[in-house]
Length: 284
Ligand SMILES: C[S@@+](CC[C@H](N)C(=O)[O-])C[C@H]1O[C@@H](n2cnc3c(N)ncnc32)[C@H](O)[C@@H]1O
Image (cartoon, rainbow, N blue to C red; front, side):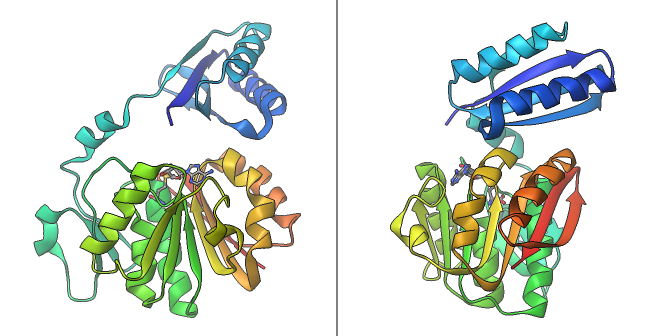
């Protein structure tokens, strides 16, 4: 699905915060908002999925009310991203090494190597959210053996493959995007865990395997909006003593997500920031 972004130039940090708060209050969980200081001054960015004139209108109105200008547009086509990713170097996160086929020779004896080519799905390990999740998974797996993990929003399948390789267990993976699901299953086969990773197309928990599943670990690297909306469904399918890893979050979205998952009976166990992206770990 095409993602849209509104970029709003703000006069100062107070204005940026006020605009971001107003957008969040008006549009709720359908979009993710952040405000930050970039080289051109203070900015607010709001992201949402699909062509939503209602959200675009609300954002424009709020910007106008604050005397700021908003620029709204679709984000570049995913193939553009692919092109820029082709020659990326391997990435280490915990014991995991994520590399392209051209870097097979760089694997070391104790690495858990995962081969992922830049393709039409997110997740080559280079992004702070993926790397943060991999680091957390490496740590979690040293302390405990998970038997029923779910990777929600699997993209390239990288996290599902990491769990299947590290722990030798079956992993259910899902994505709203059927292209990502095809690529995740292909990548699982390429990494010799095709028999362990099963990726299905599903929006949130709208698939029998997810709806009726019970998981001792759920990893979800998607944006704050969907993560907030999924809190009830997700926690309902978490086994007692289970763990939840959430990423795709900006530090300023921490409060919202922590409150949402705490109110569903989870306890925040850990929070890490990698390349400016926040990953949260909760226990039941
Ligand atoms: C940031 S990527 C994460 C990919 C991979 N798990 C990683 O960590 O690199 C987010 C993925 O979540 C998927 N996604 C977004 N919203 C979703 C939803 N409501 N249900 C399932 N998948 C979703 C997107 O299609 C995308 O492939």
